[in-house]
Length: 321
Ligand code: PBG
Image (tube, rainbow, N blue to C red):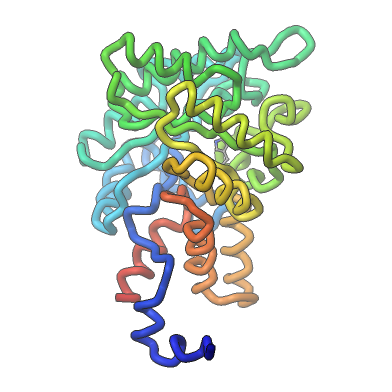
């Protein structure tokens, strides 16, 4: 057998391709901040910006014109406290952003990250006890409350990223009770305590002021444990399963797809993004590497990819045609 026969001609190579990328695979993250007239590049994340709500219109129109179907929102509030009250306030940054985006374009899918770390003054993803330990069941009540306030503001999909136990069930119950039966939950089920979140924590001002997130996010030495987390979340009615980060966790993406045959969403996180962008900038590798990376995530089994590269990839895919 001569394997090179099928590689000889470009068109035949294209026809035998097993994995493709399409613009509908991407979810683009957006950072919104309080204030006016702000479009400010995030120092740790080249080509990513903080937007104040009044500056969203051009950005949303550009995203839609590129063919991107969905955004995931992160908010940087004006005020932080111990219970992250800005996360569920009716006039909170995310609630205002959702309403504004829906006003600009009602069809763009708006996914909201549900967590407390950007809103608490201590930077942890929940309510703390006297020893500084995150209380699970107390936090879940807040997480459900945040999810409901996002749904009321018009969110299309709820994506809890806190990693508390039983939060999917609590969110499903509160949404169902409040006439939001048809709003899907995209669960960050296998979210690892990773070193790849550095640039995001700077962008979202959400680094914990003491300690780390290892008592709630997963230990990256483990893979079977991720399967148990995912099984529990599916049992609690998660509609989509997020694996995060993506690149050092392609094995987890593949196992999830094989074991659960569900919609796997890979989060190509900030550290992965910034490393690649900086490597391109200094001429170490060429831009096509972004395409190769995203293909690898799909080849592993992801159905969708949350990625800061979405806009540039949309342009790349257009030119490729
Ligand atoms: C909130 C959250 C984080 C990310 C997404 N949602 C940060 C964290 O857990 O510390 C990271 C995203 C990225 O690095 O791109 N909990």
